[in-house]
Each structure stands twice: as structure tokens, then as C-alpha cells.
Amino acid sequence: MANHGKKYLEARKKIDRNNQYEPAEAFRMLKEIASASFEETVELAIKLGVNPKHADQQVRGATVLPHGTGKSMRVIVFAKGEKMKEAEEAGADFVGAEDLADKIQGGWLDFDVAVAAPDVMGIVGKLGRVLGPRGLMPNPKTGTVTFDLARAISEIKAGKVEYRTDKAGNIHVPLGKISFSEEQLLGNFYTVIEVLLKAKPAAAKGQYLRTIVVSTTMGPGIKVNPQKAATLGKIA
Image (cartoon, rainbow, N blue to C red):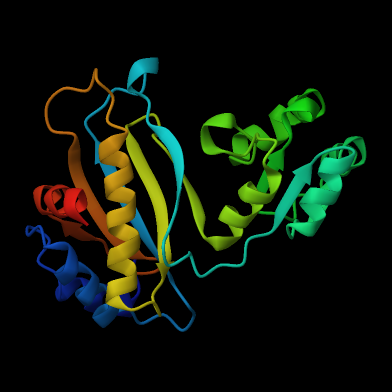
């Protein structure tokens, strides 16, 4: 078992680890017990009732959080010709093609999201071994391979987050910063829940939202009632 500090242990005492809290109560508690000396990120972890080993049960996509992530996103764009100008005017932090690929091959990874125009994916594809394991590879399913570069960049800067089931069927998504209001965190939370409900694979059987946990970077997890989250998520 991992060793935890005094602040973590004190915070954990305030949580009933056998209880599944209503979403609003969970975020209220999360803000009450946060004690780190830096601006912590609020994180969402969900166990889905899917088997990711089957292609038709993988859940992957992206959504724009209505209240953003609280983080300034560094976006690079692979493009040529007029699309380079479009990306630059839209606020991309770095734009290029072969030169950008060479820079990344040389070890440069000072960015958060990579976007690419479809006609330069031949260049980007060679970076699969570098970008893939880090979750930085542009992908049509998450809207990062598109000719509408201006829209893609705008959404990312506004708070777009990606979600994808891991090998165990879990999804991890940042919901913002602990300085956000409870209403802002709830708004972002329900946006993710609603998107995941809509993305439920037809082949998934039984309970879909198995477990939901919210936490801060350095704090203990708080369980959220999946039924309450699903019901409110449909009407939020």
C-alpha cells in the first residue's frame, strides 16, 4: 500500500468510503478537503461495463467542457499551404509539416495536443511510435484530424478533453481546477456523463456506469452514485 501524508490521511477520515455520494455532495466535499499548496486538478475516473478487448465495445471520443479545464493548452498543427495560415490565425502554438515532424523526432514534445489536416497524415503517421504511447497522435475520432483546423483549435483552447477506455474499461478525464465553483465542476461532470451515456456501445450488457470516483491531484477519491449521475446526466 502506498504511503500517504498527514493531509491525505486527515482528508480521508472525512469520507465514508462505503458510501456513494450524490454528485453535488461529492464536489462540495472535494472542495472542503482539498489542502495542497498548489492549484490541484479535479479528476474523474469511471469504470464502464464494457469489454475493451472487443472493438465494438471500445469507448472513445472527445467533448468540450462548458467551463473549460483551467489549463492553457499548447496546440501544434501539421498542415501545408493555406491551411498553415488558417492554423496560425486560429491560435496554434506551432505549425509545420516535415519540419515539425523532424523537430518531434529530435525529442521535442513541448505541447499538449497535436492536430493534423488529413492531407499530411502521411507525414504524421511516421511519428506513431513517439506520439501514440503518449496519447498525442491525431485521430479522426477525437476531431484532431480535420480540414476544419480553426474549429479544432478553438475547441481545444476552450476546454476540449478526450476520453478513451483503457484495458480495464476505465476512463479518466480532468474536470477542471479545485478553484472552480461547485456549479462549474458539476457542469463539466454532467457534460462528460451525458457524452458517455450517448456513446454506450450496443454490445455492452448490464450496468454501464459501474463505479464513478472524483478526486483532486493529491487527495483521496470520493465515490459518486452512478444511478444518480446517470439520471441527472440525461436531463442536465
